[in-house]
Length: 97
Image: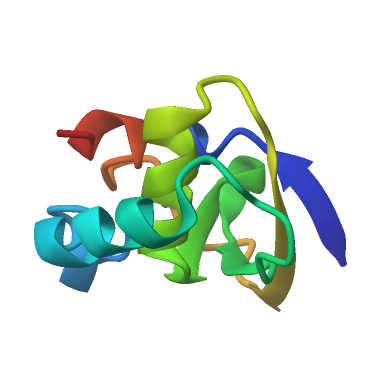
């Protein structure tokens, strides 16, 4: 199931709670800038209340959130966990440099 969402609202996994790796983010900004053409969909888990947590694509989400404020990104739900409360996890927007 695919959705278009604001990347700033996506939740980060506990293992990536600090956000994108700063060096990887800078490398991606230098390479792709504001382009999203050809960017693969972010893989997410849907939890309680429709909250979405990124499984793959934290750096891509961070780049779009930082450089293209308000632009949506395509996500694909690869796991549905209606009993998981993801609301306490930080969002991409919370961790932007």
